[in-house]
Amino acid sequence: MSEGKYRAGVQLWTRMWNKKTKAMVINDRALLPMVVTDTSEASFRYPFITQAGYAIPLGDYTLEVVAADSLAPERRAHSNLTISINAYPGGVGFSDLELCSTIKSSQQEDDPFFKNSLEVVPNPKLVFGITAHPVVFNYLELYNLNRGKKYTVKTLIIDSNEKIVRESSKTLKYKVRDAIEVGTTNVTAILSGKYRFRVLLFDQSSHEQARTEKTFFVYNPHLQVPLLTAPSFQKIELAGLSEELLSAEFRQVRYIATEQEIKLFAQLDSDADKLEFLARFWSDIERGSFDRPPIKRAAYLQRVVETNERYRAMGKEGWRTDRGRVYILYGEPDEIDRFPSLGGSKPYEIWRYHRIENSVEFVFVVRFGFGDYELVHSTKRDEFRDDQWQRFLR
Image: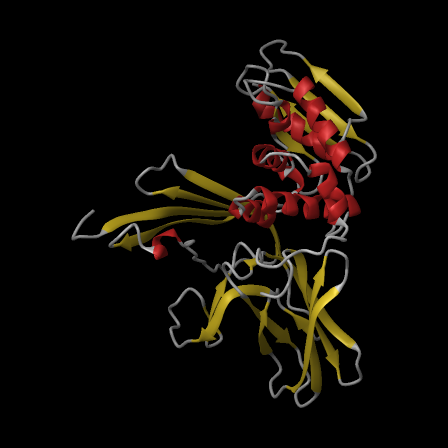
């Protein structure tokens, strides 16, 4: 504390690699200062949001962001993300859709959220509703329009049952080739759950020209969910579980939960809310919605039990190990090659799944002893890949 104010900050490391060449294109480090006069102020408990922009070539990349407390560096969190940088469309097209906590006019060009004469503040959690962000602000860029021609922009909110719960449209005549589209949608009357925000563009002949969508979440605890819904069947299975058991179960399903679902569940503080959330979650999972492969709750939890029996290591339950995670997600391997510690080489295993993506493999190595096999390489899409994994055997 100095000059009557509390001072701290967040150290941010941003790195990005080209997935094909392994070349690092971003290696940035920045300090985000935080200064408050009273740590009991409401604003001190609000999420701290920032963003940065970089110019990089087209291609596929892996982005890593690490955040650490400037006063206690051991307190840190990290996030990894696969990003594809593509060229602008040759014809009429959209940019990525941004769902924001607020959008307003601005002339502050040095503001990190400044964009096309607007302050566009994203909502990283993508959770909206009466308790936090009652209005969804959406931002979209339109490219290669025909000047003077009429276009219709249609906005849809779609639930996990593919039902349209909100729809709006407007017809515009654009005077420029590239334009922006900004809108607002109040979601305080929508039931809690997961939704897709979809935007479509039609020409004056009603032919679809472009579409884009993004998944988001609504949390409205003031609304009663109708009893006769698909999740009600899940409620029967979950009924009687304590708050502790509900939380423990959701920790075990984090491998198939999205980051937004994990953040939303962390905000729930009652047995009823957690039961409602898990019921809807399993209903979505068992149906295989939102591009996730379907799996029954009973089958998933049975895999958790099996991993605890097979892969416990260093005091960790089996489902928390790398082998446990892979087993839970993909099931029993078709082949396992086991290599014990010989000639100074560390023990390792290679798991193969021939039925996935025309055959994939996972390599696990006991890097630090105590029987904990760590995943060091995989050929499956969206899994960690390191073609030089043999160096860990030495």
